[in-house]
Structures are given as C-alpha cells and as structure tokens.
Image (cartoon, rainbow, N blue to C red; front, side, top):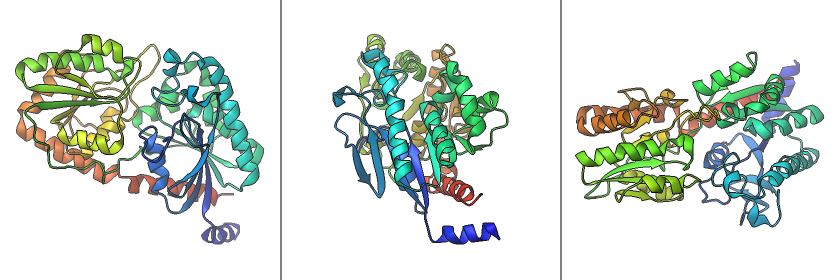
Length: 403
C-alpha cells in the first residue's frame, strides 16, 4: 500500500535530479563534456539541475534546453579557471601555475553550491559524474539531506588517482547505485568495492549528427584520429605507423583533431602529410568524419598513472558515421570493437601492428564493408541516446519510488 501511494504521487510530479559534474559544455555549441549535456537533454521524464565548474566566458547560471545549469567559480580572475576544460584536471597542471590553489578551492566551491541547491529545492536523487571529487560531495549531500545517490564513473576517475582509493571505497559502499561505461570500468570498480551494486550503461552517440554522409571528394586518403593530445591516447604510435603507411599510399594524409600538452612533442615527430587540426565544434567534427577513409584510435594503458580508454566515445562517433575503425586492444575498447566484425583490433604500443591493421582494412574491401555495416548497426542497437537515457530514466524511477 505504501509503494502504491508513492507511485501515485510520482505520477503527478517529475522526478527531480541534482547533477554534479566536473565537465560540461561552456555554451550551447561547445564540445567539452558534451556527452553529459546530451545525456540529460534527451530526457523527458525528469527535471534536471546541473552543478558544473565555471569556465572563462561561460555564464554563472543559465537554462540550456530546459536544463538549469549553475556553474561554481573556483578562482579569480575567471579567465584563469582552466582546471576543468581543455586537457582535464589531471593534465591541466602542466600549463596552470595556479593548479594547486584551484584544486583546493574547487571541491569547496562545488560543495557550497550543492548545499545551497539542496536547501532551496526538494531533489529526489543526487547524481554525480566522476567519483573524485564529485562523489565526496555527493555522499555529504546524501547523508545531510537523506537523498539517494548515484555515482557514474567514466574511467580515469577509477583507473587513476590510486592514492584516493580509500575514499572511492567509502563512496562506493554508501551510494545507492554505481553506473559504469564498459566491462573494463566495471572490473575496476569491483576490485575496489566488490559488493557495490553496478550497472553497465555506456554513454551514447548522437546518431542524427554522426551518420553516413556523401563523402567529400579528395585526392588524398584521409586517416583520422580524434582526442586529447595526451600520452595515454597513444598518438605517437599512430604517427609512427602512418609514416610507414604513407610509403604504400603516397597520397595519404593523417589528420589529428584535438589539443593538449603533447602537441609540441607530437609535432616534433610528425611529417608534411600530418595535419594538427586542433579542437572543433561537433558540426565541424561530423564533417571531418565524412571526409575520412579510416579512423584510428591508438590508445594505450599508462601503467604509471593507471589511465586508459574506458569506452572511446569518438570510436562510437566514427562507427555511427560509417567509417572503418582500427583501434588498440586495451581498456573498454573491445566492448565496442569486435575484431574483424565491427573493426580491427591492434596491439597497444605497437606501431608495426597498427600499420598492418590499417593497411589490412584499407586493402580488403569485403572486410572493410563488413566492419562498416556491423559497426553502424551496433551503434543503432546499443548506443543511441534514446536507449541510454531510457535506461537512466528507469534507474531514476526505481530509486525515487523506493523507500
């Protein structure tokens, strides 16, 4: 009877979610943390308030497609706030002299805004993205205000920052549910907290934007790599492999889309046929995908830091765009790239094997077309935002109606 009354009440009131995240678009057209924005804009059964870090030229509060966004400042002057944009928290220290100060202010400022929102509004659930530092604040919010807590782990937050594993364990033991984006991330969570309730729900792909388009005419064979220019993305191995590939395909061109602290080092080992495009908005990225003949994700497992690919969002975008994919067999990549079915898997940190797999997929038309067809089919079946948001809405409904 009690559950029946609660369910009746919920029918007349949307479930209200307070979201804490360390990355979020700085404006409606921004690419940074876009998947977090896409997750919630595709929801219709819940009310969302997002607490995200402020960034240069971003508004402190605004409504983005019916989602209220509150951005907490963590340094002044505001244009020095680069902790949560560009290369991410773990890598911004290389060009941020205020890194340590911001690292202290950041979680405190987020906590203040979170508490303010919880005092003003009656939220049903706190949903945090990335276990550190959002998970700490989310747990404080759960205990103080008696709210349900969902922790979504995206990869680096569980793979790296090992000195905080004791904190992660406390958060994981006390959250109501943890969601992860791949089998690799699932195993990492289980290793720290075996009894935590976990659901594997990957982030989705905008299949309307990233879809097969008429290929732009070009005299070049375009090899494409997309991602932050940081060590564990492995672009140095791709550059080395490409230098060998260009001997077989003299008209080949390698385009790298993204920015990061490794750009200078990568440029030093690159050649004339390698283009550093820099970061771009999503519409431009969709156009770049349409020009590509092959997409390569050369990610590696950085054993020193623990960092590795948890899911590979850009791989999903490439598959949705109808591009053949070569990716390394590491992290969560094998969840989406099934060797010789949705793409080819190469050994990580092995430029020779990467070169062979790139050449194989380019030379064998039947295999290439098979991978393109199966890859696109996989995305449409398992990775559309409609499917992903539907799974999260079911979780919200289940938690909100449980006493």
